[in-house]
Amino acid sequence: MKRAAISAALALLALAAGCTVGPRYSRPAAPAPAPDAWKTQPPWQQAAPKDSIPKGTWWQIFHDPALDAYEQQLLQANQSLVAARDRLDQARSLARVATADMFPQLSADPSAVRERGSANRPLNGEAPTIVNGVAQPIPPYTQSVYTVPFSLSYEVDLFGRVRHNVEAANASLQSTAADLQNVQLVLSAELAADYFTLRELDAEFEVVQESVGYQRKGLDLVNNRHQGGIASGLEVAQQAALLDSTLSQLALIQQTRAQYEHAIAVLVGEAASSLSVPVAPLRATPPPVPLGVPSDVLERRPDISTAERLMAYQNAEVGIARTAFYPHITLSGSGGWQSTDLAPLFNAPSLFWSLGADALQPIFEGGRNRANLAAARSAYDQSVANYRQAVLTAFQQVEDGISNLSTLSQALATQGAAVEDARRALAIANNRYIGGVTSYLDVITAQTVLLTSQRLETQLLGQQMVSSVYLVKALGGGWDAGQIKDQQVHPQAGQILQP
Image (tube, rainbow, N blue to C red; front, top):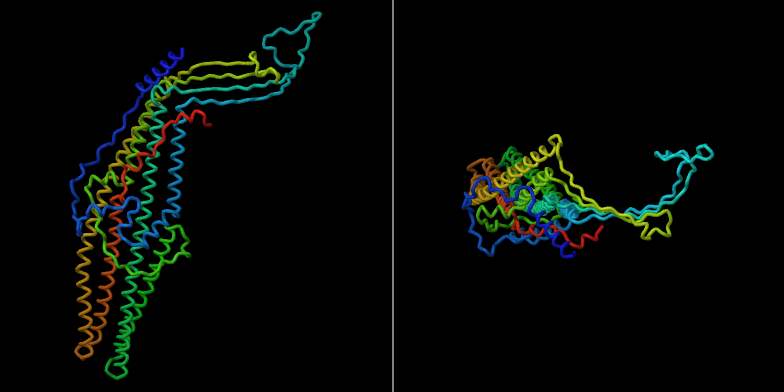
């Protein structure tokens, strides 16, 4: 009998596996074949294999200890990242909930009741007691009822509804895991971009301070010449106006720097008033970034993995919708003990039980199941479109990053030459003014051009570093889709005894 029972169970499982309805999942193709190489080639030397982006700590490619410290603080204290980790824990627990339906459900509902029956209760067809031709009144009764019942139910997953639920839950779990990595990538890239922008502002402040220094010397010069009757009051006023304007630029740079400092404080989980980033002018160059080939982006980007796992989830939802057209088979049983007294409650005569099976077959549902299936298919088609759009956006962002760095590299080289030209022009203008060849307006113009050129050179360097950050982000920050494959739950035998 035991062998027969095992054989029957195995046969039932094989039948159930063979009757699973719904589409098998396979990742749809990208909207167009991935190109063999990027359209724009980088302006720097190609990265060697040893220069690969560090997994999980991509910012180390910039070799900046201060940035490393802020990024580690972000990983520990950023509240948006903490919330994303909590969402992953929630998704893992919900996936475990889905696996619970693969096991029998056992419950108990013991009760103890003391009740009094009414003397005027209906007899339900029973004839009243007749004494001497007179119907006797029904006496009330009082009794205790003690019940210890158990109920057992198990859904026979003949058409795969439960298995599709587990598949959908695991796809959702993996999507949430990829989303966590994407949140981390976005936040860490935002921190690095803010950090390099702040360093650029420090360098820009240094440039403007240098300009303030030689403009003050120029003001002293024209004041002395004015006192000697050589320079006019107009020249003094013009130099004073230029100096005041440059001092205003210093104040505006400080204001902008404070805003970036406050943004960094929020990203690393601190109050804006409690974090101070030490001044350290930007002295860096963009590192070589290992680009790989365009098709690698499909496995590197966590947002693309999120979109791909959502497709798998919607595909499983289509399978769940398909199972609604087939019978819903449930095996059930109940039993326990019932007695009007505690003493004989667990005796054999107090035992009761029942066994049964239920097969619910939808026949007419007013089109509900058909509409649910159509909605599930539309949701799947929508997820495919979202996935393909994510792929196109990823290719665009990488190409944007490469072309930005190429253009900025060229602009920075020419701007460096422009700064040197502006320095020579200022020296010539000063000499010509002192020699009485030209007016002081030429000196003021040369000072303005030099300051503008120096600030633009510094801004271009800052933009170059920020563009490097966003290029690394567009490439996925060293992440790969294999890191979420283990993020799934499986039914465990021990769950049978878990509440």
